[in-house]
Image: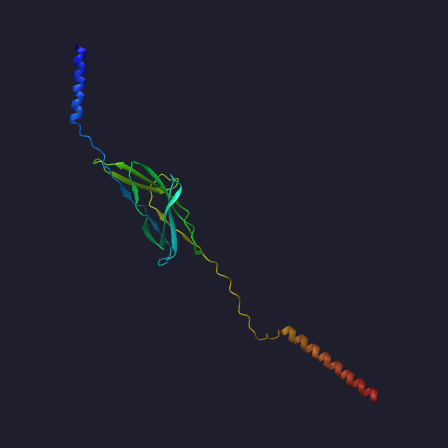
Length: 195
């Protein structure tokens, strides 16, 4: 009989605990969150376009690609979640089509944690960090401006004839005296032959 009372007492206690326990039932809900990025250029006022991609690591496919003209901030379209879980994304800057810039090669891992809050509503928390790092960081890209080499300047070459150098003038003077002497010698020889 004692066993019977012990079992009855246990059942009554369990029913009492269930009756006074306030359970929170999860609401049918969805949650949306957005991933923001920033592009920073060295030169202010430069409006060179840069493409930034958001890729799902789970499905290994590009979800969206946005373009930022010059320096500025932008956000991807909101991501919608309906179930609790951890979702992983990758954000990176695509190679620049502009030959004046080299795209930032930094890759960011974005973790989205979807959980229920105390009211039973879905909430999402976004954490971003550089791939391979443990420390949180904002998604900021800094493409590098390529320095174009300045071609060497060719000296201006004058189109007029150059004056003769001193050595050349002396040589021409000596040559002209020798020629004049030969002419005189030939003339004298011609005169002697007539006599």
